[in-house]
Image 1 (cartoon, rainbow, N blue to C red):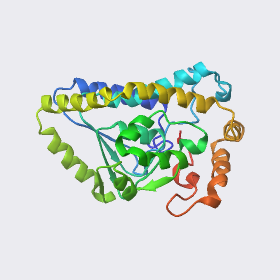
Image 2: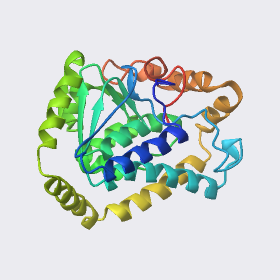
Image 3: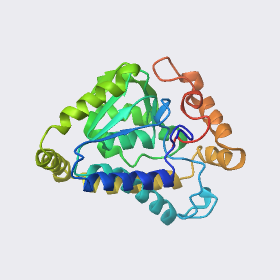
Image 4: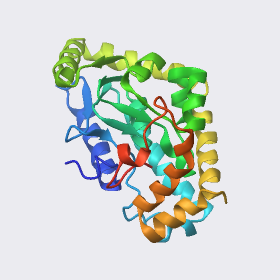
Length: 276
């Protein structure tokens, strides 16, 4: 499946959590590898065009603070399912890894990518906050500020330089190399893997991860409910579709872009869904 470059629909997210639960119960399985289908993207982010009426009115612009809180709390639980899985979870990234998909990858224990991969915390360019800022800060420290404040996209080598991914492999060798690593890891005794992950996770919890996530969730809701120039983005999305909204958004940044910051995000990211 490669609908909208593996956009994270509610259905897909629920299936993902179910798959993790199955992996957790399987005594023969020691390592989980997460990858995108189709070879074009790990994922382009949450599916911005799907029906989310279970959280609020059809018109998302009419969502209350409570509606937004429920939606972002649900998103946070999806990400935390990786953290809470007792077994190591590896993200195998090939292609675009944007917005919420980048958040999901960051919650994984290890990240490997192909040399054709591109990354971006592009929520900032849509007037949306990023609930997962604490985990990004943990991974790459103060360097995350530039990524969050600009919404720039960056390539695989920059992701490696930042410490976001552990290794970069040629696209045609990615599956082979990650499989070798996963098989080596699976030779480690299961109690060693499980308790090592618990110990590492507890380091973050002891440092205040839960409190930081709660504050980040509140900030995300406040950003998304604020009245800013990006309200026009939401209106265009609602009235004319995501393509028109993204083209308007890209026009704001186009004159200030450089080769290192990205080509127009719409061309790269999602002509057919995702990027939330």
